[in-house]
Amino acid sequence: MSRLIQDAAITDASPVVQDSPVVQDSLAVLERTRSTAETYGIPLAVLAELTHRCPLQCPYCSNPVELDRTNSELTTDEWKKVLSELAEIGVLQIHFSGGEPAARKDLVELVQHATDVGLYSNLITSAVLLTRDRLAALADAGLCHVQISFQGNEPVVADRVGGYRGGHAKKLDVARWTRALDLPLTVNAVMHRQNLHQLADIIQMAVDLDADRLEVANVQYYGWALKNRAALMPTIEQIDDTTRIVEDARMRLKGVLDIDFVVPDYYALRPKKCMGGWGRQFFNISPAGKVLPCHAAETITGLDFESVRSNHSIAWIWQNSEAFNRYRGTGWMPEPCQSCAFKEIDFGGCRCQAFALTGDAGNTDPACTLSPHHAEIFKVAEAESSAGADRFLYRNFKGGTLEPQDEARQDISNGR
Amino acid sequence: MTEQPRNRRMEVSEASKPILPRHARLKFDETRQVWVILAPERVLAPDEIAVEILQLCDGARSVADIVELLTAKYNAPRADIVTDVIAMLQDLADKGFLTQAREAAP
Ligand code: SF4
Ligand code: SF4
Image 1 (cartoon, chains in turn green, brown):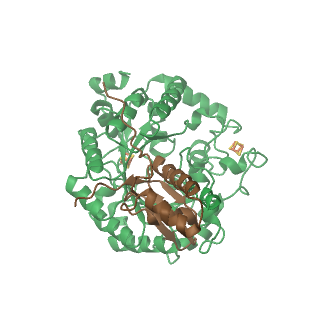
Image 2 (cartoon, chains in turn yellow, cyan):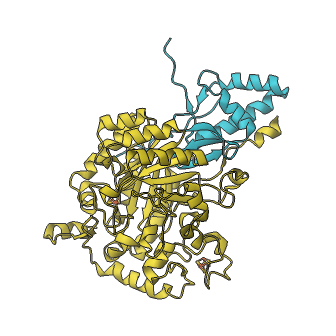
Image 3 (cartoon, chains in turn cyan, blue):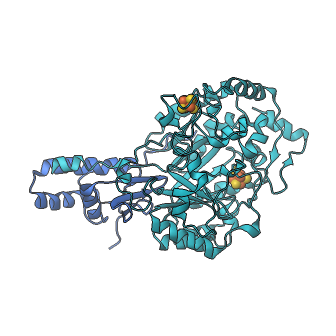
């Protein structure tokens, strides 16, 4: 008995958050049997981007610059069919995201359907469109977890970054309702040069909100964020401070708040294993139904992504489509990756970033110090970080709007 | 100033009446033919014995009750089983995936 129970220790089979230190390749337990996907096991979790509509306009938004229009979005019935199919092939968790998923009138209905087919549902939201009643309805429909994005710890910086007045106060309300409904809460904070000075306060805010987890995410520079890189790139000093603040908080808040954090890769020696490797553990469905290896994959032009509207099944697309297979494994890799000892550890980094910074998604991610592009890109980034160009280009369907040049706003952004 | 928040995780003892919170779902995964616990951003893979223990955690039984059932079933020394059951449950509690049943009104 004793021996049997020791074996019973709960093992983290596969944390499903990407871009976080908890991604370890410990899929072994769940990959033992691969009944549906023969070569690449069906992911445990899938991200459903219900819409690209969003009342916020974050300058680092990970949606593609070319946003999906409302009239191209999957219908309620199409999404329901997708959810049923995902559950059937072995997906266990669904992340409802966007854009802002609450911009869909059928959100409660879709969460209910996810519950009905046995999927564990997470809501990834900017929160500003939610009312208390709607959140309660989502909880009743079986929603399991809420993640709310924050742009700062107080309204001046936060509402400026999100480009949405009153947004911060609304987020605080929704966070409190979430806990009042006894739903677990993750605070997601995207950090960059213009809010990193608030990190300690953001951590305290998460504690005060009784959050279970805090994700300290760093901007990834492709799509909108690349257009805003000069306004967002942190300085090296900020990164050093950040690491210290996070490490201190992790110790102090053990058992109170879990903190996920990865050093931003412009300042790391090796790139992160993006999405656990292209087409290995994760896929994403865009508002129009494209099945993508990650939420930013459409920033790579020239790759053709299959749609759930095609006559292929989702499992077929995952296993066989050209876009998934192109950068799977290590065979596609050029030097320096091909002969590198780390190639199965980081899979050559992020394809979207490689494309954004070198024009070829098949290159080594320039975040790697071994990339021939690294030195130059790092130098530019460092220069940008200290040049003080703080003006944002806001994300919207018009291809972006430059932040008004208003004295007051400039003061705010320099007030660190 | 803000007080240091209290530890939100529960301490598992023989008297605890543990139950999985609604956000930690024990489920049999038909595709992979294994039991899993679904939690925020996590999928955990408990083994058979852990599953057996968790299925007994209904918020009414105490840890002592569960130990008694297992002692009888496996015909093993009680002391060993107590230690193992508490260790497994505490591990889960530390991750935030185990809770106590609220005192039920009569
Ligand atoms: S990053 Fe900002 S703008 Fe983009 S979807 Fe999220 S909340 Fe909306
Ligand atoms: S050369 Fe390629 S495989 Fe090696 S560390 Fe750099 S990105 Fe990773």
